Length: 154
Figure 1 (cartoon, one colour):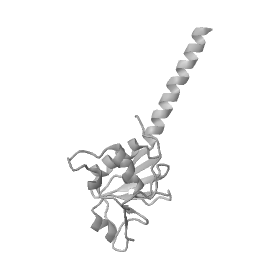
Figure 2 (spheres, helix red, strand yellow):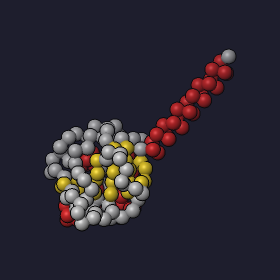
Figure 3 (cartoon, one colour):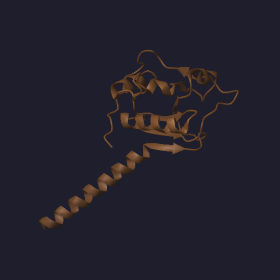
């Protein structure tokens, strides 16, 4: 009976771990179509001038260079969580990351995922706003909110 209980416990543990991995994988998803009805908080990684000239509705301009430390390395997670607060993210939102370089978009999406952002969608094509697009909004110099999502270890 003890062996049977151990086997059941091990099966439940494996199933739980698999479910956790599936949930983690689902929280960072490349998307090809950004015209869905899903509500996104949009982060535009293009240079500030391009983003301010036109982006997606209510996009926040956060050029990819903000994620790079002056030494050329990726910023620390402490700095990243501060930076995310400057665009009003708390961590529980679904974020869509767009930019003019799909590789940079995926890398920043992965950083947001590791920082604990609830759901991250990354546009897998270079983004270019149409001529009639609304202006993106620049980030604040101080935090608008405190990013509180727990960091991921996966």
